[in-house]
Length: 200
Image (cartoon, rainbow, N blue to C red):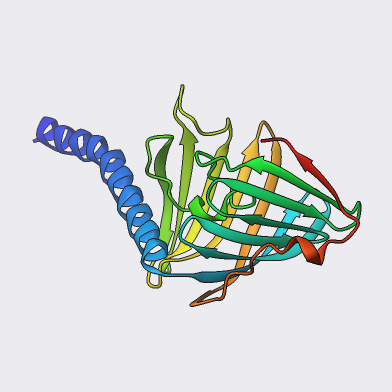
C-alpha cells in the first residue's frame, strides 16, 4: 500500500509541470487570439524603470501602430518605424523589428508569445488572475531576458508585463484596453524644422 501511494504521488508530481505548461500555453493562445480579433485597439499604460515612472498609450491596427511615451512618439506601418523625439526635434527612421515582443518596441506583436521564442511556465493562478513566466529559448530570436505576464483569466486582459534583462527591470502596468480606436498617421508637416535621420 505504501509503495502504491508513493507511485501515485510521484506520477502526480510528474504531470503537474506538464499541466502548468499546457495551461500557460492555453492562456497565451487565448490572449493572442483576443488581440488579433480586434480590428484596432488603444491601450493606456504606465512604465516603471528604477525610480522613474511615465505614462503612455498606443494604438494598434493589424501590423501598424502608434505609440506615445513622454516626449517620444513612434509611428510604424509594419515595415518602417518613425520615432519622433519632440525634445530634440528629431525623426529617426528604423526598420520594424518584427521578432521583438517588447510592448514598447513593437506593441502590435507584444502578445504573440507562442512563436517558439519563449518557454511559458504558469507561476500561479488564483482569484481570477494568472501569472506566467516566459523564458527565452536558447538560440531563439527573442532578446535575452525573462518576461513575466499577469492577466485576468476571465476577460483575458493583460494587467502587467515585467521585463528582466540581466537584473534591469522594466514594469509595464496596463491601465485599460479599448477596442475600435482610430490609428494616428504620420504627417511630416507636423514636424517643421525637425532633423530626419534614416537608419534603415
